[in-house]
Length: 259
Image 1: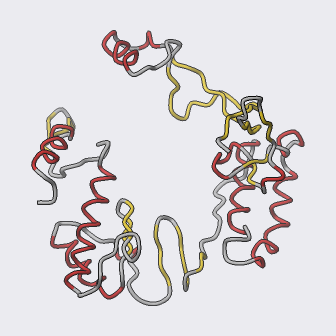
Image 2 (image 1 turned 135 degrees about the horizontal axis):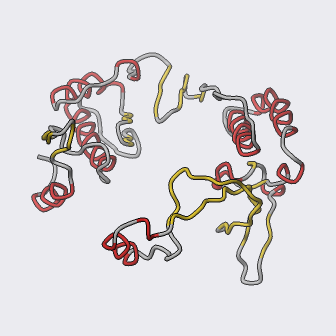
């Protein structure tokens, strides 16, 4: 109903129509199951179309990017259309989560953020005691995100700055100096530009010094010939591939940064 015939046929050929469970094949009732590469994009398109229709039925101007935002299964739209939106979702076979659905009052939740009267109020969660520099860097950056000046006001940074400094003290001095932009994630300690550990090359490229994970490559001979051939077509290096989450250690490393 939503897609043109050609798009539907393309996506239909790329989906998994059945799965093997307990020795037998089971036909899947969901069009796009877990693991399909386009599930996120397709659900975004579906929910955006439904949100626009909900606004239309309620006489509210539908303006994606201005009063409607959809990111996967996270949906934001005018409160006037919320009841119709929930009804439409149920009509099309979806099950809204009442614990994460807010249509009145001052509190809202979306994309992992909690907001009260337009201000971010979600705290920083530390689920384990850091026992290595990489985890301490993650903690340091989490505290900074909570208290950065552009979050809700200068007062919040003054409240958490002492905790930020104490967390920094847990890092060796050579790692403590590895400052850089938020774009590099927890490879660096997030800080203002003047404190970045950076250098400029003759060809005007910028490099940031980081605390980078060391991965061990899996040689391609672990797989059968057709997989090695496909890997070569995709341009995968002949010395192997890196397994997800397989970290052998960390080291200080310069990485290129487009600045």
